[in-house]
Structures are given as C-alpha cells and as structure tokens.
Amino acid sequence: MPRLAIFFVRLVEKLNYGVGRMAMYLLFVLMGILMWSTISKASGTPSLWTLEMAQFVMVAYFVLGGPYAMQMGSHVRMDLFYAQQSPVRRAWWDAITVLALIFYLGVMLWGAIDSTLYSLQYNERSPTAWRPYLWPIKVILCVGFFLMLLQALAALLRDVATIRGETI
Image (cartoon, rainbow, N blue to C red; front, side, top):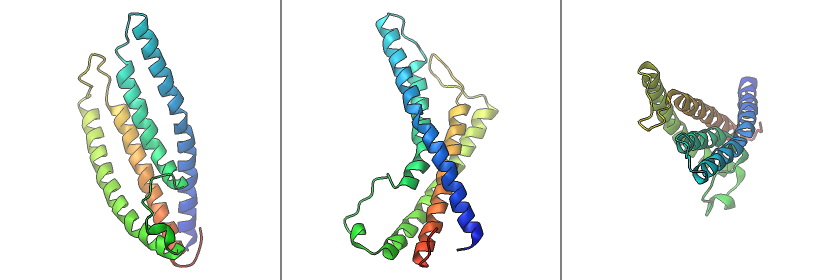
C-alpha cells in the first residue's frame, strides 16, 4: 500500500480513538443530568432543560462514539456465513458493504451540513419551553458523520490491503 494510504489510516484511527475515548465520558455527563432531573423533580422544582440536554448529550455520545466502535469492531455483525470465510473473502465482503456505508454517510453529512447552515442562518431554536439554539448539536452531528466517513474510508483501505495480501 502507498505510504499516504498507510499514513491516512493511522491518522484517522488515532483521531477516532481519541475522540471515542473522550466521548465515553459523556455517559457520566448524561448520568449527572438525569440525576439532577430526578433530584429537582423530587424537590418540587423540576428543571426545564434536563430532558433536552440529556437528549443532546446522548446524541453526541452516540455519534462521536460510532467511529470508535467501528474501529474496535464493536458493531453488531450477522456472521452466519461471514465467520466461516477466509480473511481475504471477508475483506471482499467488508469492502462491498463499506462502499454502501460511505454513500450513506455522504448523504447524511450533506443533509447535516445543509441543516446546520440553515440553523446558523436563522438562529433556529427548539420549540420547547427551554428554547435552546440547535446549531451546537447540529455541528456535533456534522463532526460525527465526518469522522465516521473518515473511519469508513480507513476501513476500506484496510480491506483493500488485506485483499492485496498486505497489512496496515
């Protein structure tokens, strides 16, 4: 494999590893928000912001952790026939399916960027009582989709290397 491809794969995986490890701590942030929600409701003064903020943190946790999960091979895989095949044959299947994933992520990123630009242009806010701006979570979605797209490209390069009998 060309050195540029190897550099790209290693850079993307290092970046997604770091972002994914940091995203894991968002679970503790989510638990803190939900604990605050429970305490404030029990005390008779429920907070308006807790439900929506918990949703935003969960979206960030999910979207920023996705590339890390893909890198670690933690996504669910239906391996009825997959596990019995040779590594080269599995790489062929992975390369085909990752192309579909790359197309899907490209469409999702395009839509997310369009939605984020709309949100920034019109100062879009949530229609709830709290009324937070929506652009921060939309930016996080764009970043997450972009990182997942980079990880899918890195996975494709790894599969191509396996098909060629090389390793990255």
